[in-house]
Image (tube, rainbow, N blue to C red; front, top):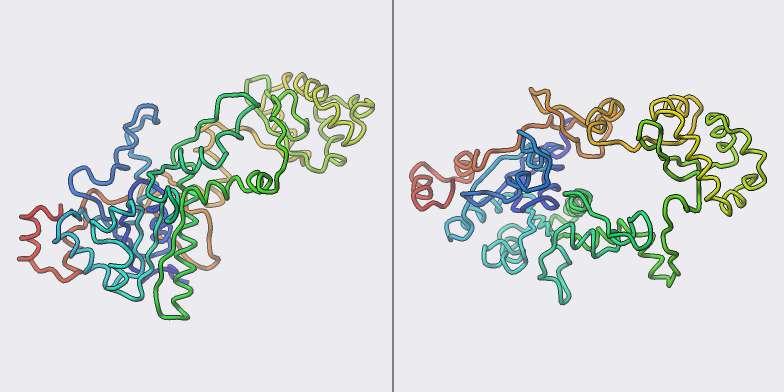
Length: 400
């Protein structure tokens, strides 16, 4: 089977992460994705790895991940000529993706009403921070604010009640949100097969944040009483807890089938005496006395290194994972074997593949993202501009 989306033309007129990610996934499956950026500095996301606190690296790793497999057009949409270029491209495009602010879209001539009038088969994919209706629809939003803080995740994912709110990582909300937008686009393309017409689809950071925190949010909607999160040492379930090993590494247990796996764990830890302890005889008693059991397991885990426990637990069928650091993540053999981490074409540098596959279909091998305006002339010629017109646009600084 060929690349599933080969033959689809997609215009990525987004910035930063969530909206462009939807285009990246489409490019992975063969779509021709044109990345539009302003001339000069381009998409501000090109420069995010220079920010203080970001990992230091010779590679522009954020740009590599989120804009691979695209062609680049640097275009000044603030000019009538730049808008005319977009309108020409839209006339035979399948999908237009944007997360520009709602008011800005009208100024740039890229609002849904304007573009849909040019192409009734166009799928217009809109991404916002807070949705497209309501008092806060125009409010700027980032994954840190609209996804992480607003959804309750920042408040709930803390080590214990009263702790400082948890900090998120760059793109942690944007990447899953981009997959939601991709899903909406594919649903609209499926609908177009029946109706012959395009439509507007969309998603937002606040919707995805609350979906990610769905269990707790649904509990709040049902009027549930929330218990303060206890410190790790006072957790309610010692067999779904994490433990520090002799070398400082941590292991997370997830022994859901306690009756089967608690005896196995006790044997691995050389603490079979715990099985006869009346405090730990069954699930209910282990829960009531979880502090005591955690303390006993803390002492046991501290006697050996994490690699020792990993080998022993794996051999005995226990459900666990080491708490990986980023160096370990980048060398994860199972992730490589499963195709989660894949190399760029003609390069030893690895990247993260889009997180699903279709059996029998091939994906495009990851290609490096475009330099700013790398394919501008090529795309303009495909849109019907001749040498004289291209020269005139260049002279007016419409493209770069």
